[in-house]
Length: 349
Image (cartoon, rainbow, N blue to C red):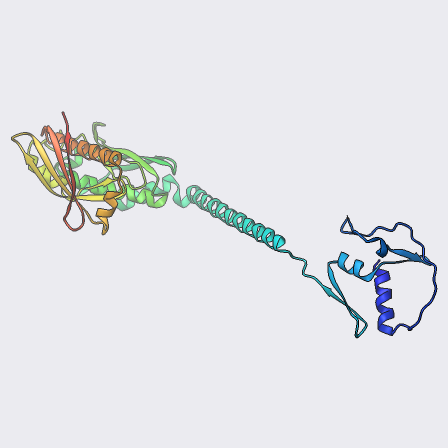
């Protein structure tokens, strides 16, 4: 078919002879196909053969090949113009395919980033520089000399998801120095240890541990941090070594500047009042967040309720360590502009 078209085009370009000639043609039921699809041809336009060459009407052939075919009678010219192959449907399909490919690329990029992060974390966890034994040495070298006390050892076990810590101190040598410590002194030091461990691994690494008297194996304090934004919880069990004072005022001093979490918000204790008439403690906390009021309004009741219980229990533990019995704790939460967000009564009975 293409040979026939080319033949006709070449003859036209060379200048055909004007005149007429009688010829014999052979009709042999020739069917034209384009891309596997049969082309409908009118009866008077059926292809025919002359001396083994198939002849097809130029308009039929051109339109079958998606071309516009026009006849200029004045110039006696056949004008063939190629059509655009892309239809509106084709364009829409192509755009949809491109959008799908873009999404697949974005998904793959996200997976690559996630895998790279896992690889980095894995490499970090297994590298000798970040092994538990190496971290033990680092912590001991940095934090063993503290408040005129030399810590005997800092032992670590576990993995990057959860690290257990045991601190040993010999109170047969440092009993006097230990007795002069406040709860806030010990909690601040433990916060430093926990922060250093999470810096090495991840902020989501959970940490639990204890401080033990090397002389008699007695537990002086237990502590835990669940990772993320959770605060450090410390339970003191050393009243036999720090006098077990019944003075509530010493608890007030220990509590000042203590940090607590309510959801993703951080609050710091700035005032404590104890009333012996009903054995109650009033705790005033404020947030340093610039948008504290907005953040507070987004907290669920369950989140606040859980935090109030946790804070109330911690307050009670610290008073109990000084032999002070509480009946309830009243918590006042303020924003960064000293506006009251809300207050809650936590009954300990």
